[in-house]
Structure formats: structure tokens, C-alpha cells
Image 1 (cartoon, rainbow, N blue to C red):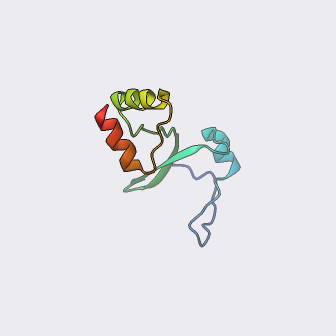
Image 2 (image 1 turned 90 degrees about the vertical axis):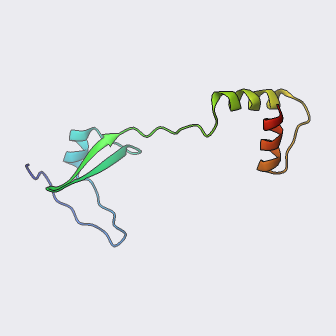
Image 3 (image 1 turned 30 degrees about the vertical axis):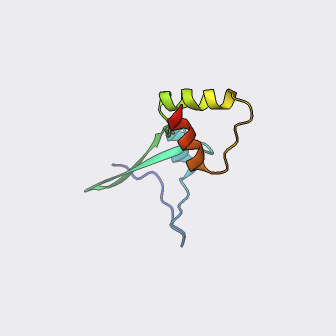
Length: 87
């Protein structure tokens, strides 16, 4: 492995990825980065982070039905879930 650049860690555990490395990995502001640990050291690589929906497609259908009904307002999450379960 070739060491391209070095950097120092701050007291908060933050490091700056050197510009040459950012260019090689096509990183830019907002890029997500994965870290891997091996017996020989660590590696970083660009990655994509995708959010998983907390609701199934069936639950989304219930939510859409509920949203289309006029006047339905719930003061708590539990009240809304109870209504969804009854649909």
C-alpha cells in the first residue's frame, strides 16, 4: 500500500481527508464514506446511504387513505397508529 498523504486527528476525532485523496475517490461536500478495519489497518471508500421506510407498502396505503379523509387529526402517534390498524 502506498501512503499518499498524512493528516492529524483533532481532539474531537475528526480528520481532514487530503485533497488528492478526495479527488481520487471523487468525494465532495456531503459525500458518504464507509470505513473498514482490517488486520493491516483501515480503509475508506465512498458509499451511498439509503434510508429505509419505517412503513410497509400496506401501511403507506393506509396512510394515504387516512390523509385523503378530511378532518382526521391525531394528537399522538399512538392514536394515529390505532386508527391505521383499524383501516
